[in-house]
Every structure is written in C-alpha cells, then in structure tokens.
Length: 353
Image 1: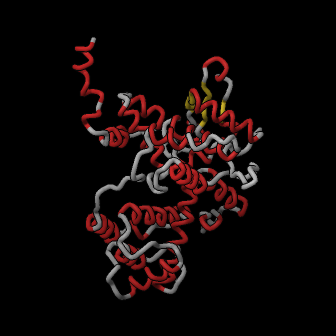
Image 2 (image 1 turned 120 degrees about the vertical axis):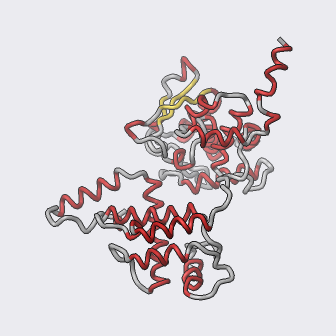
Image 3 (image 1 turned 30 degrees about the vertical axis):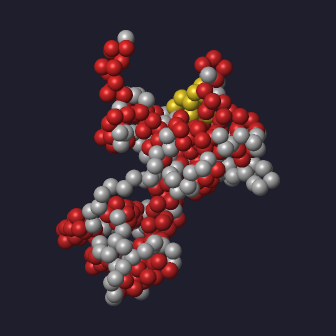
C-alpha cells in the first residue's frame, strides 16, 4: 500500500498527518481490495511503460487514458502495431494471458483502480472526461459477452462428501483440509479470502456442549464491514472438524488455517487464498474428479445449488451466504433443472398425505 499513499496532499498537512492518512487508507480498505489495487497498479504501470516508454503521471493525461481503453477494447491476436507490441510486453512479463480482448469486467476493474489511485492522491481522474466516459461505454458494448461462471461446476453435497472422504488419514494436513472445506461449504459457501482470513479467536466454541454448534465471526467479507461482522452458526460434523483441527494443531491464537509442512508440522504463517485453491484442486483430484472440475467458488455455488435442490427458501440460504442482492443469489437457484425443483412435487406430496 506504500505506493498508494494519498500524495500530494494539501500543504497544510504535517508529515505526521500525511502518515496518519496513509495508515487510515490501509486500515479502512479490505485486504483483498488492497491486493487487487497492487496488481492493477503493476499492470497499468507496465502497460504505460510498454506503450509510451514512460512512468505513470499524476494526474494522468486524457490521451493516455483513451489509449488504454482502445488497446484493451479489441482483439489483438491477429493485430500488428503499437497496441500488439505493448500486449506482447505484458504477456512476456506474465501480466497478461494472451491477446484476446479482456472481459469488460476486467477492463472496468482496472479503470476503477486507476480512478481510485487518483482519489487517493486528491487528483481529478482523466476517466471523468466526457469523451473518456463515452469511450468506456462503447468499449463495454463492443466487447459484451455472456456472463461466465466463476466455477465451471458447483461443489454440491455429493462432490463435497467425496472430497472430505479423502481426508481420513489422521494427519494434520488431512484434518486441516477437512475442516477448511467443511467450514467453507456448511457456513454458507464462504469465499477463499474469507476462509483464509479467519483467526482462532473468530471461533466461538462455547455453544458446542449444549447446542452442538460453534459460531464463526466473519470480519472480512464483500458485503459487511468489521463493525457489522456477522457470527454464523456451524453445526454437526463441520463444527467438530474445526475443533479437531484446532486441537491437533495446538492453536491458541493467530491464523486459523495455516500451511502444513511435508513433515506434517503446522507452520505459523497464514494459509493464502492460493493455498486454499490448491487444497480444493488436490482434494478434487483425490476424489476422482479433474483438478479443474471446480474452483474454490464452487463451494459457494454448490452450497446455494444444494439449498435449491433441497427446497430451502432463498431467504434462508441468503442468511448464511450473506448475499445482499436476491437476484444474484437467485441465479444459482435458476441453474437447478426445473424437474429437480421440489415445488414440482407439491401435488404428489398432497396425494401421499
């Protein structure tokens, strides 16, 4: 975040005020957003160096902003010229996958980050200019494509059960994977960033003895802030699995999920979102599925898909998934084949009664 400090600032601010403001930006921005900002800044800076042979300027020129949109609004696979040459430099640096036009959402996100950098520096963004705004609209329409799922397949209960069955050797690695997967699915389909951000003190085990459940505090989500952090219930074997991992790992504080060495030693550092992705891929493979059968988001889509298959009301599922928009959550319910919808059996159930 040091490169994203809000400078230059009004001259009346002292150095201490500037440091305090920079720290406020860091504390007031979600960790996953900070990571996205850093990645986007690296991409934008590399693109300008390749396209213009210059570093980013603050504020940036409108001509540069317009060129950025034009370079990313068309297919460059068979193209020649400056735009293709800049793309080749980005591909060589590992910052761009290929030469097809990026998804409109990707372009929008990078522009949103670029605008955010200007706000942090108390500067006007070139993307606010009327011509640039109109170019963005045209680029979005020109590159419109069908919405792609974040995970090719949902990890439904059947798939999850097969994955969990591969975690039964008693080794700490198995205990960790079992606990992380069961928690992520049964607590409402948690995102990988939410799972890996959990600390030991986010687990309240006091209700376990009397009610057979634990509570999980989510400080970092897309839809809530730390002061609104929800406590979600986790029942039955997923709850017992989390407590078994904590005990086997000897955890008294700090990160809940951590890397485990080849010697089955629990390390002190936090498991990364990338590490959690590897757990999902590895357990899918051990369960007999292709590694790319589903992404970590498949746990989230799988929970909602299973809720639809089981006839759980959408509102009840959303209480756990923490979706704010019913229309977004409804998409998972709509993916269920209509003949599998429990509502199609209403009359059959009536006659059986």
